Image 1 (cartoon, rainbow, N blue to C red):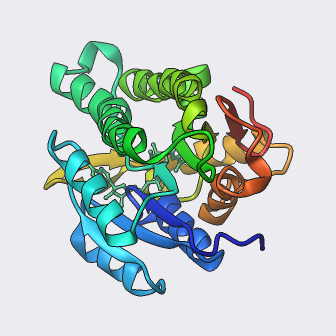
Image 2 (cartoon, rainbow, N blue to C red):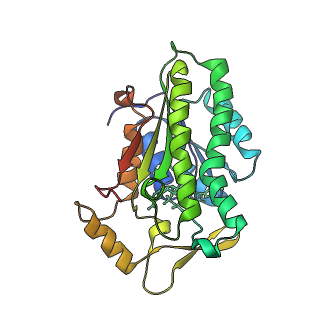
Length: 266
Ligand SMILES: NC(=O)c1ccc[n+]([C@@H]2O[C@H](COP(=O)([O-])OP(=O)(O)OC[C@H]3O[C@@H](n4cnc5c(N)ncnc54)[C@H](O)[C@@H]3O)[C@@H](O)[C@H]2O)c1
């Protein structure tokens, strides 16, 4: 594995799923990781399993959380080389049933939280980085749903599409700070968001509210058939794609949307 020794990283939503696998991957490569999650217990569990890593439970929908998270990260790690904007959840329904709250919460967690974190990081970069600095990396998590759309996922797809605009614009703004900014868009990855169900969707609790999650067994079968590789991705597959955008070998790649979907393009 290519080393990230001495690097400092923040991975949001890294108490579970793709984020947890990413925190582990970056840690195994030598980075110290701030493990942020809404849920303190899982953030602590992941951070405690990774040497030198630190939990930072916080709800990124809270407008003040981003500034505190970036301040904490740079203080605790003595700087911040890698930011992975991964935290997210789903709250789907067809447009005629979609409430304003649903629309706003999806836009806020998938685009607003990324904006606030990157704004806070950008303020730090202005004081601490220029073209002569060592290269730093931002990886924003999007989805095939943000690129190609998906029925009943209007607000989620709008949030994930906004990630692409954030990524492409900041790549242009932050070249002068020697920062690459890329997005990784996943197809179906095996986490609680895609957990299989027979008849009724599974429920996961987000901020005390039950949210429908999962894919029906039939949808999973369709996703497997759609991939030339014949399966859905694992959290480790996803973490590997993020890792590629964090290592020095990707220093000449910026403003790109990397599709990590096992070959699915719809
Ligand atoms: N699983 C997939 O198929 C898939 C596909 C494409 C994109 N994604 C995206 O990947 C990211 C990770 O998803 P996952 O599948 O690992 O889901 P997950 O539910 O397993 O993990 C997401 C983590 O984010 C945390 N989180 C949610 N809201 C938060 C908030 N307000 N503040 C802080 N933390 C919060 C959750 O507590 C959870 O631990 C999400 O942005 C998701 O939209 C997932």
